[in-house]
Length: 411
Image (cartoon, rainbow, N blue to C red; front, side, top):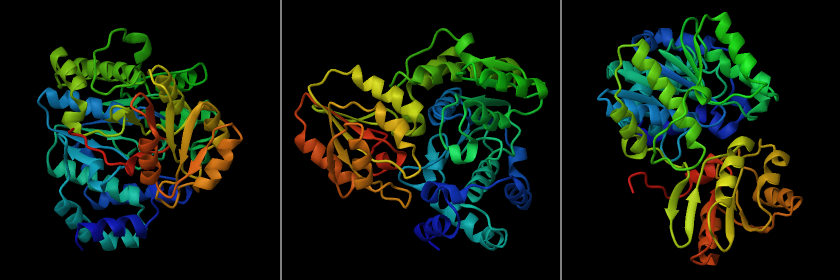
């Protein structure tokens, strides 16, 4: 199979959360342990940082990779989901895994995957660990897919565990309280491995303290310990929390491992995240006059921060291109959006996308008014036509809406 056929097979044969949602969620780590054994346990050959959290785990993972690259290390980076191409998930020093490696890996192990009913995410994790081990990376930054305790990435023993924050998302798997979600994320805390917490609340802090205590793990609350941060090319107020988390994590690496990162490496790494890693879709500016911003924020906590950021901008009128997936709690997120904007409702082009008419009807209950469009690009193009040069266009609501835009990380 060529690359397109290989990735299509991966997406279609097996449950894939990105497309199907709930049916793709596995209830334990049995499968991924069988897979790791089959691949000769590549994860045991890796030095890792493990990153979980409701929001900010992608940005934090990319920042960490960028900083470590600036320090001269060969850095593996595993993240999800991808926006355009599956290979975005697996990078070394910012370069995506080759199409050939993906094809050869799947071809070699395809019958094993089929016999053992491996999910899309389990295969992807196995591929990443196998690739990083074969390429002999110095360190790998591994982002959790969903939750923590039962996530396929949770077979690693990292140098440091990182939990960025806890918000309400994916309640059908992780529970619908801060405590229950914190418990799932805290499942990445390992015996005697230090853990960094980015943000905490009165509900989540006791969960983290208890789990760290049981595991004899030193726990570091970055928001209490780090007061000074440095500028980053990742814009958006919400990156301040992520920067503190990164600085605390790098401090631990410097103090407790053989990795050495100077303050210059740290500053340079934070300032060149996009150049070093190719990260897309985080408060990313796609145009000016009118200013166009896209952002992958998609839950209450993330959207609240991004929408507050928009209110700090100077503009005549706000245009919002909005699409969501069908498992979003609309009553939670729609009240966050401003009533004095023009809306362009669309459906992300995946099976999980919520029908745009349904989104429009729900939005109307909160006095959010706009038309329905056939596609993300039609909605975006119409917003661009309607906006004057002093207006502001925001595109978001879902990672998969942003994925359909023409993004260029190097530009």
